[in-house]
Image (cartoon, rainbow, N blue to C red; front, side, top):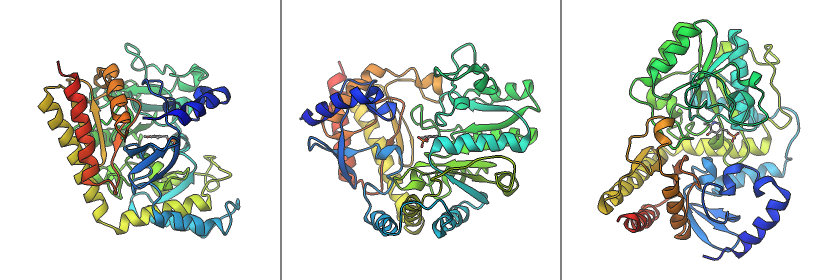
Length: 430
Ligand SMILES: *Cc1c(COP(=O)(O)O)cnc(C)c1O
C-alpha cells in the first residue's frame, strides 16, 4: 500500500503540531503504521491522500452513523451556508433542534447546545454541582468524559477512591472531589456513598462504555445506580456522547429503560459538525444561566451550519425506522463473523458489542470493566491493526475503542472485513 503522500504530510505535520495531530489517537502511537491523511470519504468508504480506499469502521468516532457525506446533510449545510455561517444571535434552527431532541427524548425536557462532548459533560457536572450545592462527583474507571480537568481521572490501582489526575497540568485540587468507582461493581459505588452520604452531586457514567473498548452494563447495574442516586439526592448523568441517537433515538437510556436526571450528547447530533448538548429534567435545567445562576456560554454554540447538519441527521434517524434495525443486524453479523473466525482458527479472543458498536479484545477473559480490558494483548492488537489497515479496513489505532458500523455498510463490506480478520487469525495461530 502506497503511503508516500501520508509520509510527506506526516513529516510536515510533526514540525508544526504536537504529535503531528489535533487529537492524540490520530497519531497512531499505539500502533506501528504511518498515520493516514484523509482526503475524502463517501458512504462506508474513506480515501487517503495516496488514493488508498478503506472500509471505514471509525466513522469519525461516531458522528457518521448515516455514512460519510450523506447528500441530504450536505444539501442542508449548503443551504444554510448561503445564508451565513454564524450570527451570535438566536435562530429558528436552534429552536427546531431543541424541539427535536426534547420530543425524541421526552424526559429531556430542556436542552442547551454546546460545541463538543467535552463541553457538554463539563457543563452538566457544573450544573449538577450548582443544583445540589454539593462538590463531589463519581466517575468510573475507564470511562472517558472529555478532557476537562475534573474528569481526567481513572485512578491507579490501590488508590481507587483518590482523585489522582491522569494528565500533567491538572492540579490535584481540580480532581480532589472526583471519586472513582469500578464499572459494573455496585459495591464500589455503595462504599463511596457510605463514606460521603450527603456530599455527592452526581454520578456520571457511559451507560454503555465505549472508551475502554465496548463494555456493556451488567443486568441491573444501571437500575441499581439509579436507585442509589435517588436515595441520596445525587443526580445521575448519562454521558451519551457515543450512545445517544446510536442505540436508538432515545439512546442507551431508552434501550435499558433507565431515566437519568441529565444527559450529554455529542458526535451524532452534529452530523459531522462540532456539536455537543446537555439536557434533562426541567427543574435542573432551569438553573442554567441566564434563568439560573450556573454560568455557561458559547460564542459559536448553536451554530446555524452545525444545527442544519445535526437536525437533518436526527430527522433522518427518526423518520427512517429501518436504520437502527439494519445497523443492528450488520453489527451482529460483524460480531458473529469475528467469533466464528476466531473459533475456526482456534484463537482465543473476546468480542463485546451492542447494535452498531463492537470491540474485538485480544484477551481470553470476559471484559466487564477497565481492569479486565487492560488484560488485552495490545501488541497483538497492533499487529492486527497493521494487517487490517493494509488490507483496506480503517479501524481504531488502539485496542480500547469501538468499531462503528454505519447505515450504509453492506453485508458484503462486513463479510470482506470478516474474511480479512480470518486471515489474521489464521496467521497467528501456532
Ligand atoms: C467523545 C466523547 C466525549 C468527548 O467529546 P469531544 O467532542 O471529543 O469533546 C465525551 N464522552 C464520551 C462518552 C465520548 O465518547
